[in-house]
Length: 407
Image 1 (cartoon, rainbow, N blue to C red):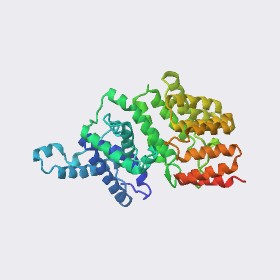
Image 2: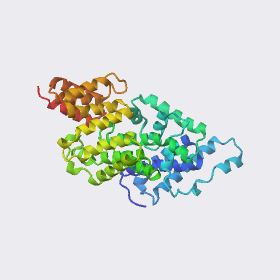
Image 3: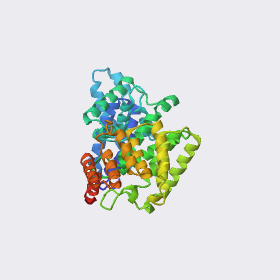
Image 4: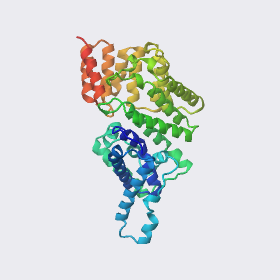
């Protein structure tokens, strides 16, 4: 046994949760009950490990405890069945060896069951594999938390009713790939800029999203979008060391110390996206990675090729129209052609219900108004954005921008 600092368990347990869930679902099925058993095992670990130390094989410990919880539950539920049927179904938990491989990636594809709608696939995967709370997923989808709770519950029932197999054919895996990539994209975004709470970022989520993206690309090396997504994550995460102050405050891209950016990640990301663009059909993740590469390869903020970024956003908007893409294009247009051109583009999405009350719309408007020297309007827009965000670091940053604008 190894000694464990009380602060360690969450960091240790989070990446193991989907591995344990995958092992139980592979052996027993019963997705919903398996998830409950895993949560009980994680709770037991968080209570016991700080005092008793981490087991030599923590994943095997979690699988054993979760398996016992699940078999107890299934025995109780099956009490009316014949004894021989139950004995055939339920092997002793002590004989359940930890699997040699990590089932997380397979669990990821299982959650994207074809009998569910894409939004339900995304929600369930973020919950089961990403470990996000229902509230975090609801904010990522811009829907009420109660709505998302119902969606996740229905998704679990759908998998149970469909009897989804843990194994799948190559054709089934290809069909589910797009949803899997979207899940990892949302997981990374939530980790890179948390939608709520006192911390700007959650490195546990970004690290797990990058790890899973590497696994997807390793399984499908010829898929351009799998490479594009991994490239996008690496190019974005490379800036992480420079995007916060010593006290956790937000530093915008234009003001970051670029000598602190991770050059190894940038080089890997650039190579990935260049290769994907050269030999694959164009896709949204490749385009977003190309935009990130333009930012990362600029020696200073003033060296950024904004016109190239505008063209890339125009392509992205053409193949994957979305109000957030238009919002980002407005920033690039404002930098390339002046703030009033960016503000004119923003007006095209002012009434879009998907973004109308999102804080980023007000934050971008405030930035462009400040560039246009419309101080009063910029200050009010910053304040509105600060009221609407649930991220404390973003709120402090936006309030600080408003306070710095002199009359």
